[in-house]
Image (tube, rainbow, N blue to C red):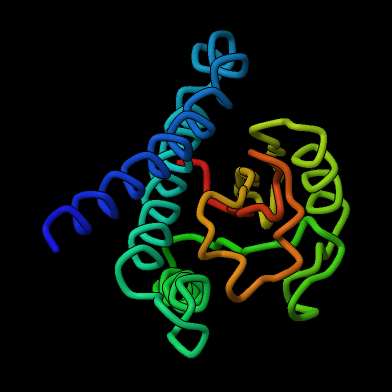
Length: 180
């Protein structure tokens, strides 16, 4: 039994390493000049990277340790509840958006030009897409990161992911954070 736990733990660690690698490479080309020009924007980007690692790590760990059959609560559903709680508390907004063209629900489809452009960027292999917007005189960072299939268990609930290529984005996390 111990070897089984260690094997599952190794898989989870490998999945997390993949997610971290995808997340870490996205910002290098954006920060050099921008950090000097707008330190608040760079702090907000850093916060998005941290949230992205946190959310993706949680989904992988929940899936690895608590999802064993298709009747279990999917980690994606738990993540959506977490995203909603963060929005209700006024911290930030984050949405899970489909990149396959076959969203499970209409609420997972890209809603506006930014989200459609972000999905196109993710499908083209880009690890990061962003836009700075202003609403009511306040600046916001909209950022998108890819969501690849990193575990075989994902196909248990999402059979249309079975044909996804390694590291292909099947979705995206779309963030909106105030630039402070």
